[in-house]
Amino acid sequence: MKATERVFGFHPLETLLKVAPARIKQVYLLRGRQDKRAQQLDALLAKEHISIQVMDRAQLDELCEGRHQGVVADVVPMKAYDETDLYKLVANASGTPLILVLDGVTDPHNLGACLRTADAVGVNALVVPKDNSASLTDVARKVASGAADTVPLISVTNLARCLKKLQELGLWVTGTAGEAQQALFSADLRGPRVIVVGAEGKGMRRLTKECCDELVKIPMLGEVSSLNVSVATGVVLFEVVRQNL
Picture 1 (cartoon, rainbow, N blue to C red):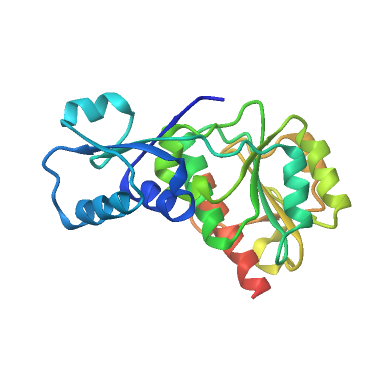
Picture 2 (cartoon, rainbow, N blue to C red; picture 1 turned 180 degrees about the horizontal axis):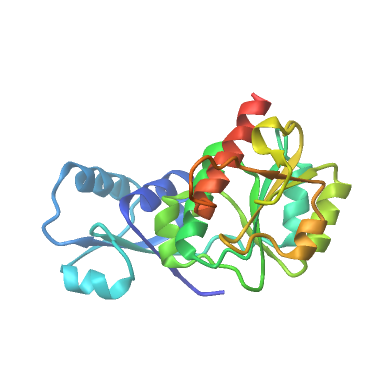
């Protein structure tokens, strides 16, 4: 595990200040940025006695890839979750367990966007296979807008085995597939649930699909055949929330 990670952008840093300020070791702020948001952040950092170093834009640009908005931080990496932690999270869930699985999603932007939606709907964990999946890069963290520090991201060696274990724990596994006969909005999505979303275009792998209890599709009324994976994930997850309210 790396000694430190980089977080950049106001949303991710503000979220980290709320949930785990002790993880923030050093903050780098753009020289001359004195707007209200920067002042508020400065006050929060001072309250937590976190060191701030002022830098020119060129120096900040060298610290990370992406739009940093004038603020970058060195932070202690969050706890590395494993498959055992996943089952504990399910067993100890305060409400109805909801797990999101991304199968073959390799774009860090999509991973970050899915983390952000997962946080919004109260997902207990986001699961990805160790191979052929996006990892929690600086870019993914930025897109997640802080959700990378609130939703456990768990990589598993054998996704099919993991899904079967979740089924044994009482969760119903619903996969999304364009060829499914059942429409999302006519499916019963109440109760403990795993939602599986595949890569855009390719969809879920065959073995993953075979592990699902049911397959659903998002009705497409126009000429476009599929949605971006993060958009599709949002549609499905909020339908789950709606049915469980």
